[in-house]
Length: 59
Image 1 (cartoon, rainbow, N blue to C red):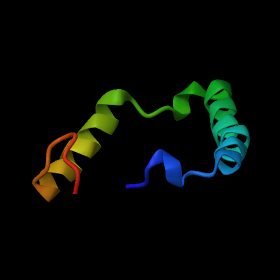
Image 2 (image 1 turned 90 degrees about the vertical axis):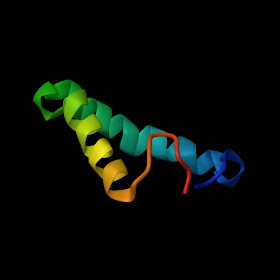
Image 3 (image 1 turned 30 degrees about the horizontal axis):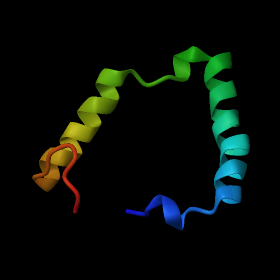
Image 4 (image 1 turned 180 degrees about the vertical axis):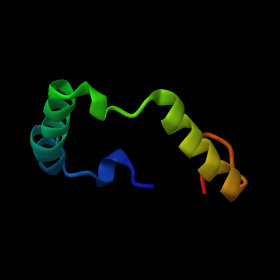
């Protein structure tokens, strides 16, 4: 896990302006692309169960 201090502010800004904006625009144009919260949560819970961890555990 990286700390905020490890992040290059210019790289973060570039990422926000390119990849994040493009993803937002694509989702706005076609909301059916969205993954329902319940599906995302279930996928995370399956990963946590496989690892024997809980939300918030740091390994």
